[in-house]
Amino acid sequence: MRELTIVEALTAVENASALDPLIDRVAGVVDAVVRPRALKDLLHGVPAGHPLHPVLVLVPTGAWISSAVLDFVPGQEKASRALVGVGVLAVAPAALAGFVDWAASHEQQKRTGLVHSVANLVATGLYGASYLQRVRGKQASAKLLGLAGLGAVGLGGFIGGHLAYRQALGANHAEDVPHLVSPGWHAVTQLDALPEGELTGLELDGQPLVALRRGDEVDVLSSVCTHLSGPLSQGEVVLDAGRPGEACVSCPWHDSVFSMRTGQVVHGPATSPQPVFETRVVDGAVEVRLPNAG
Ligand code: FES
Image (cartoon, rainbow, N blue to C red; front, side, top):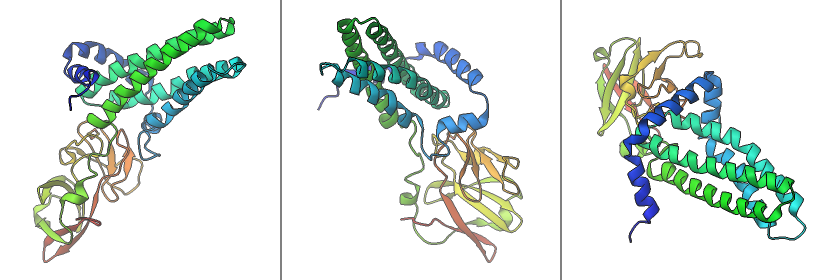
């Protein structure tokens, strides 16, 4: 079956490097506006364990779809106007969360994301105009503007689906690790071969691991960053991430920070924890086991 023309167009957008200068400017604005790391983590969805943007988008989308239904029901003008207004107001937090995620993405994702945001901006403008027409009592043009806005937000949603499912922005990029390593204990290196307090890249069943030795203790995580597959073994050890006595690793690509002991996300943009291996030392050999592997 042939793909829809819009999908072919989106594939072309992914490779449209002409968008990059504009992307750089918008990303600079996003970084300047959202500076506190705690706020960024919240908007990424770190406490929720997955991106916040898709949840926040439900409010304007739901309000606008509901208003479109009410526009066909006589006598519901006030209720429909209220829903349009709620939708316009709810765009701000949803857009902010989306832009923060977007600013920490690959270049192809940024190009698609820019078009996604333009479609949603157009939708918001149309709904804003629709609200004003409703206040003025011009119901016919208000309803037409609302329908046009619904078309634009539908297009934005389609592009968002492309971004999330085909380009995998927001997905857990280490979800398959437990299915790719064999169950049980495996020797992966000698304790003496691990430098103290430094990250070391290892491998198990073709899967990259990152290890950190502290004395006779060794912490081992999957080296595939859950955010966008960055190589954690090429990152840095972080000792002051706000977790006393706990060593963390920062990703070299977008600076997500994970606990080396638990794999938990300390700072985004990642929202999913790293697969964490159990470790033991047997006759000088470091052995690892991934719970639920296989
Ligand atoms: S790949 Fe983005 S933070 Fe690791």
